[in-house]
Image 1 (tube, rainbow, N blue to C red):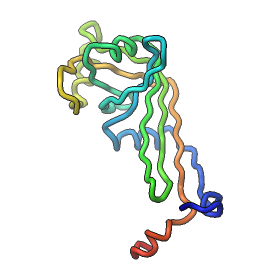
Image 2 (cartoon, one colour; image 1 turned 180 degrees about the vertical axis):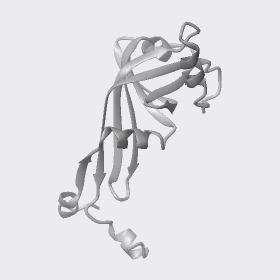
Image 3 (tube, one colour; image 1 turned 30 degrees about the vertical axis):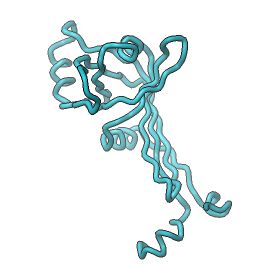
Image 4 (cartoon, one colour; image 1 turned 90 degrees about the horizontal axis):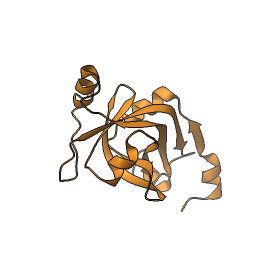
Length: 154
């Protein structure tokens, strides 16, 4: 159990944009926030990066329809419950489906990410999220919990 003293020793760090992109590159699954069916929806997606653009593949349906040419939010995090530490990155921007109407270079770069989906089924629609804003936070514990100290990590 974390004490008040341990929480006070923890530190909240604001991440730079470069650090946010570096952290995004370490993961494969994020959450896409869209407005659909009269509600905001938050849905898991596989993704990859094309420089600073987030690339996703989707099946036809609500998610694709709500994301195409829409302002969306995208969030990725990594949390360590044991140490009560972790990070979170939030990207806000414009999503668009990549179609044959795009320049050949954009299509090639998008497909060149090598993004594969985890979920079964047809996911042949490629969507790019062009960031307008990116922010991130990291919680760093003041010190490791006793379980780590007892295990000889310190």
